[in-house]
Length: 366
Ligand SMILES: Nc1ncnc2c1ncn2[C@@H]1O[C@H](COP(=O)(O)OP(=O)(O)OP(=O)(O)O)[C@@H](O)[C@H]1O
Ligand SMILES: O=P(O)(O)OC[C@H]1O[C@](O)(CO)[C@@H](O)[C@@H]1O
Ligand SMILES: [Mg+2]
Image 1: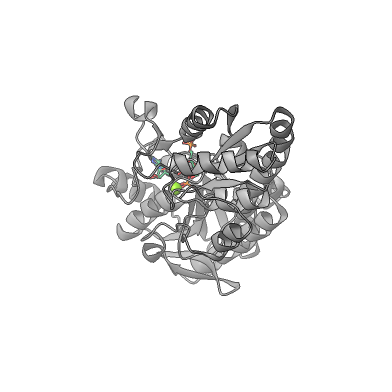
Image 2 (image 1 turned 45 degrees about the vertical axis):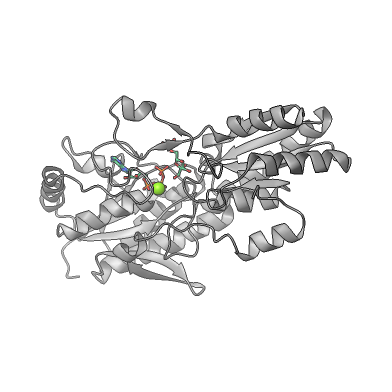
């Protein structure tokens, strides 16, 4: 690296996620070990545009942040870097925006820019790399929808919260003999619904990957009532939809001109009202929403964040730009960002967890 101070940039982009601060902490600590300076850009890629906003991250100031939820750098999934606006739809970042990023990175003499983001932000990072910028990617997602890494931080923190929420909701559902419909995040992937639903003892799990039939769910509820069950717990992924129906979305942001990914949400209410109508069992819906993303990371997610941060610094040191840290074969390695964002990782309908769930009587509405 030579003796002159090397400067690395870091940013967090997309929805926030438990474990981001653990990555930031590891990047700062590992960079300091090498005598590098770390510039943390504020509010994701937006901080690279005029007026450029960054903080110089020093080692002592980041000690202890790994246990904190959110990101000390701020993040956004709205603005001038929209690349994904629906399942499989990719947009190009305007050249004027790419040119401005170039000027910032060149002007500040950033030798490597570590972009921590989900599938959309990494698609943006790939476009910056193609424009010649020294980009290294770190996958972050509560949705677990990034292929090429078998695991990413944030997911298990979200699953833990869903599990605890189901434990609580069951006792009130039992007391009132109700059907409880719990809507969870995950966008177009059902991982949070599946893993949270299994751990939390759901009776019915509705996934984007398995279009459902209301009649099948109603049949399940009636069967359970006939068998003496006091409650039925239904977990529905925000991206789940009936076999002959549409995704339920919240379009207000797009109407307000805030460009970014389509917002999903609202299917829980439809399921609860249909099931109440079809079975005459009182039903309630609960949307867990951003509670799944907030709060401190689990121990696993802190440690994963640390491993990913250290690996990202190593990629910068080795000038392996265009690569993303990835977990596979029980170790941390890397893959090209291009490869990593090519496909959304969805739940295979015949995966081990679903086969096991069916074996213990959990229904999927199909
Ligand atoms: N500055 C930005 N301007 C516009 N869109 C952005 C910006 N930064 C990220 N995005 C968009 O936000 C979306 C989500 O980002 P990303 O995939 O990184 O996060 P995520 O973990 O999937 O979380 P979420 O999808 O909830 O934001 C993507 O569609 C991406 O294109
Ligand atoms: O911050 P927002 O725009 O509400 O994002 C919500 C989305 O972000 C995620 O939390 C993470 O991708 C999704 O599960 C959810 O659809
Ligand atoms: Mg995403």
